Amino acid sequence: MIRKIVAVALLVVCLVGGALFLIVDPFYMRVPKDADMLRSFQAHIAAFEKLRDMVIEDGNVTAKFSATALNAGLSRARRDEYGSLFAQLPTGMVVASHISNRRDLFSRQEVFCR
Image (cartoon, rainbow, N blue to C red; front, side, top):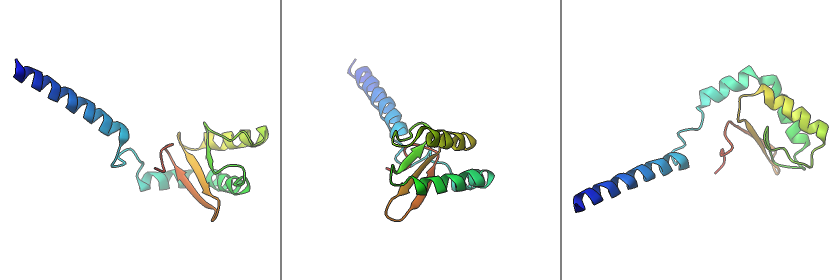
């Protein structure tokens, strides 16, 4: 009887641990490969360049831009312009700008910077 309880407990721990491991993703297994990002960039270079220019202009309002989370400090027309650009890009794309040196970062996931 004790062996069955220990076996079931061990199975539960392994299942819960495995699920948590996949959720936390400590080895960044879900991050897109560099080649995928380059293909996306090359296929949508005009949209990326326009997005970069807009991010530089709006860098004093916010530092993170995505299709699902645009700062309310931006005008409605500006948010619509961002929305149309993000609609041209792969789903889940996020753009961030580091204010001090205007470095633009692109990612396909909201958790690109841990």
